[in-house]
Amino acid sequence: MNEPARLAVDTRLRRVVLVVWIGVIAIALYFNWKYLAVDFEGTLDIVRQYVQDNFAAVVLVYLLVVSLRGLVFLPSTPVLLIGVVIFPPWQNYWLNLIGIVLSSFIVITAIKHFGFASALEKLRASKPAYHRMELQLARFGPPIIVGWSFFPFVPTDLIVYLATLIRMRTATILLSVLAGEAVLMAIYVFGGSALLDLLISR
Image (cartoon, rainbow, N blue to C red; front, side):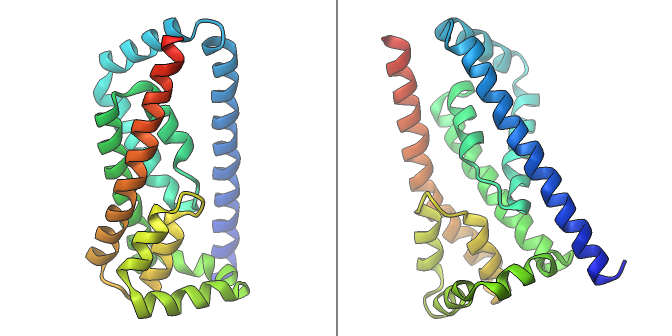
C-alpha cells in the first residue's frame, strides 16, 4: 500500500474509532440517567456483583480499552470513571496504571515498528508548538514527561509520541509516564471513590 493510501486508511480508522468512542460515552450517559439516577445504590450493587462474578473477563476488557485507546489519542478519563464505579479503589488504581503504561508501550511500538508515525507527520508539521516541545524534551527529558503526564488536560500519549520521535529510550519514557500518572491517578481514583461514597451515603 502506498503512503497516501495508507494515510487515508489511518485517517478513516481514527474517525471510526472516535465515532465508536463517542457512542460508548453517549450510551454510558444514557444508562447513567436511566438507572443510576433512579436507584443509584441498588444499580451499583448489581453492577459490582456482576463484576465480581466475571472478574477476569471484565479486567481483560477494561485493560484492552485503556491500553488501545492511546493509538488514537482518546482520553482515558471516561474509562477511569467507569473503573471508579465498578472496582474497589486500589484495584482501579493499579489497573489504570498498568493500562496507561501498556498504552504508552503500544504507542512506542507502533511508531518504531509499524509506521504509525507517518500518519501523524502532517499534524506535527502544521503545529510549531510540537517542534518547540521536542526541543524542550531533548533538553530536559524525563521531567518534561513527568510534568506532562501529571497535567490532566493534555493527552499523555502525545508526549510519548514526541519523545519516541526524538529517540528517547523506551524505559525512560515509560518510567517518566509512570511517575507522573501515579500521582494523577491517585487523585482521580481515590478522590472519585470518596465522592461516590458521599453520593451513596446521602
